[in-house]
Image (tube, rainbow, N blue to C red; front, side, top):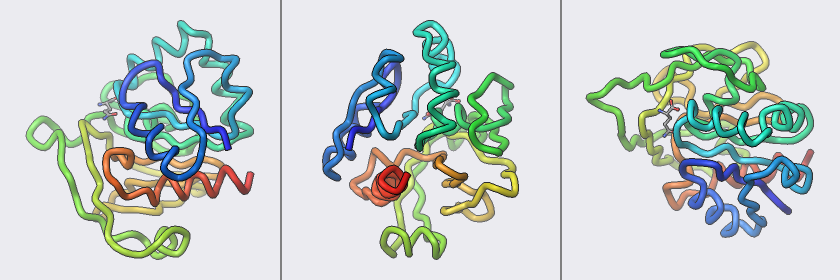
Length: 194
Ligand code: GLN
């Protein structure tokens, strides 16, 4: 199963490694033509504003909008910001593939990075495996609200940190930076069933 990992900027190599560990074939994506050959796509962490500039420059923006209508995308951190329908702090364009509102860099300077232990929602545990999860946050956004179609699968207190809507998953943390492959596995399950 071929999975694209957007490789214009940011933290894409660790995603490729996690995918390979799970038996999928990662394809580092830099051109629009590569999109047609993959069954799912990961939008990695990095700097979402820089990614937007590069996506437009490479002619990938419109292709991504089309891809999002047909195939699953997992967005992590900056990738989740790209998927959201509304972005603040500051506002910027997005693919709007998921009905949610995100605030960039929402943890502020004092706690701009942290590792937190999360107890999964029952559905996440059922679809993957039970047990707590270490979530790495790096200048992360906070999901401020989600629409009726979006479902939180992981929360940190009240705040959703992993949301599913239709084909897509958005996580505000970096699942590729820990050895826990449950989130990638969940994504591959979605790709397989699409
Ligand atoms: N702060 C970045 C942004 O707003 C996201 C950080 C990350 O992806 N680790 O785009």
